Amino acid sequence: MKRLIPLLVVLTWSALGHAEQMASPQTLIRDVAIFDGRSNELKPGQNLLIEGSLIRAIGTGDLDASADAIEIDGGGRTLMPGLIDGHAHVMINQNFGVVETNMDITDMAYNATIVMKRFLVDGFTTVRDMGGPTFGLARALDQGRVVGPRLYPSGGFISQTSGHGDFRDRADPGFSPKDAGDLSNFERMGIGNVADGVPEVLKATRLNLRNGATQIKIMGGGGGSSRFDPIDTTQYSVEEICAIVEAAKDWGTYVGAHTFNDRAVSRLLDCGVKTFEHGFFISDQTMKRIAKEGGYVVPQMWGLSPDLAKNPLMPAEKLPMLAKLQEDFGDFGERLLKNKVKVVFASDYVGDFADAERARRYELWWRTQAFGSNFEVLKQLTSTAGEMLAMSGPRNPYKEGALGVIEEGAYADLILVDGNPLEDIGVIGGTESWFDADPEFRLIPTIHLVMKGGRIYRNEIDGRLSEEAVSFPAMEYHGILRDYVPGG
Image (cartoon, rainbow, N blue to C red; front, side, top):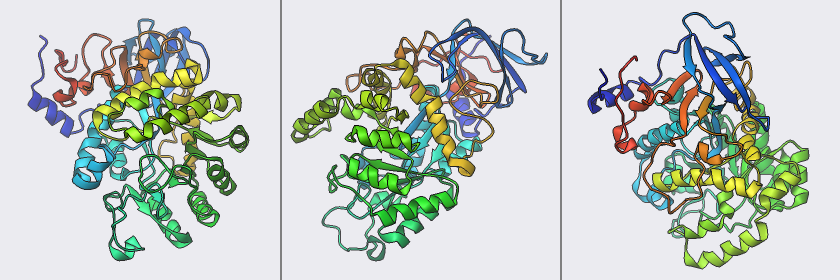
């Protein structure tokens, strides 16, 4: 007889990490149309055999599945790789003013556990965090104490004084915040690190690597969310950048940089930086150089969307500048494709839950407009992102299989959806609603299965939430919990 699990039991299971179920040695998924992350087509009528955390075989028939293998009937739905967010800040989970004045690390850590669950049930099985104190969160995820995607942590972003990571007020005293004890909350909690000169930037880089960084994030130019560094500025000297890159290379990994303009990107390329976060104002010549040197551009395209003007936090005096930027650089996505640059999806997840969640789903839709191709956006979410993550080399915590693709030997990070994402990005949650969208978090109804490493974390194929989904706090689902029978 079906029954609703009491909330007390739900919360207990969550606290015990019950979502990390004991996986069957094999799982056979039958009758699916596969998008493999690389091909601009679906391959229908396929079966897929999973053994442990990896994909063992793909084809028709039983694929030599064992007699006790778990079987899932895909019903002809689309099976695709789990989605990858190449640039997020999962620990910066409130608006900057609140983080700076009214949060501590415990607030952020608790919020981050909810952020990660929501990423996962939206089909995101991997997130690259590009600035924040996420090392403990990454360990908790890998140990099964928290439910969420795989996490590639950068640690605190590294910024020069007056740079995009310097969040002190003008009235704060002292030229050397380390000596004067003059730290912003961002530094105090490990979100960022203000460092100047080769010795300081080396120390900041090596500290992040010691603590488990899979890549290093630096601020290579100005930005819109910081108060005292104009967006056109170039930040860090050649000597400082090259020192950071060499220290990362010594650990077998790479550096990504927040940047927007040609001058900054050229300097970063000269030193060997590999990923360029945002980059909206770069020229075709610079794009060609990035492509030639094997770099990646990781932009949140909503930054060039006219809907950004609807943000209630947008100061009225910035609206004319925003309109001008959109007019001048609205073809950014088209030019990236024309110049054969490898592009990775980025939500730039930051801020309070409602706005950040809505921005991510809006970003899925807006990118299809900016790049003119669902297929291109899907590659950015899957195979291209997986290639970028692999640049972490020996610092990559997930070396057993490939990410972002469906192929033999790849990780069984999979989502099963109604419809064809090559034709309709809405089946994975893309929507043209942003600030006018429902602020409450609700499940994407066309996603029926989410699997990470061969374990099922969301399963609604049979019309019931899985044990893993039910173990999320009921408040997150706003009353949509359904009857569920444990074990069957």
